[in-house]
Image 1 (cartoon, rainbow, N blue to C red):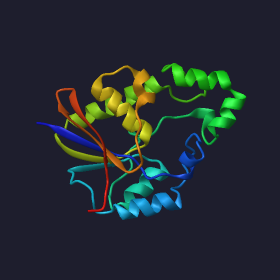
Image 2: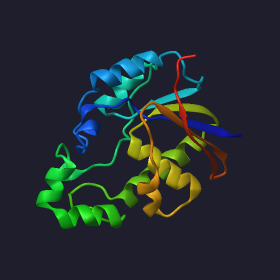
Image 3: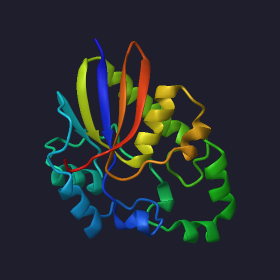
Image 4: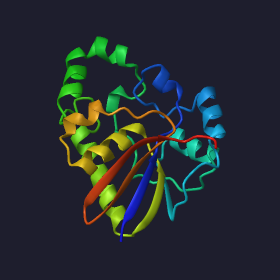
Length: 190
């Protein structure tokens, strides 16, 4: 049987506008309005998963998606960079930022490397295949990117080449460890 995983990227929060390493902050007012505008326009699903971040849980609530938060599809752990702006970190640790953008094994910030994020996301996807059906998950943008890398069995370095706008659905369908990928369908009010 086929498993279909529909990954919904969360509405925007202030961290994205400020180019801030996620600090688990709330949605912006504009993000809240956009989430409410697409409420009720979700595909049906047998199971629901929600990343534990405030942004994902609030997005799920605003779009009318009941579900428990799960730790497995959480965003990349950014260690001591969490909550700081990219400009601030680049000013203090320029070589570290360069390494983070070019070396998928870099974890010099004390958190998780991109390779570790992709491996963890791949394990989560493999677990979902065990029970065929449709899964709808509100997950952080970096989890959507990692899932696309895993689905395509691409090199981790392509992670940075994937853009995921807020409130879009990326669909994975597959079985037996093979995935097809449908990218970035916008959630729209019909």
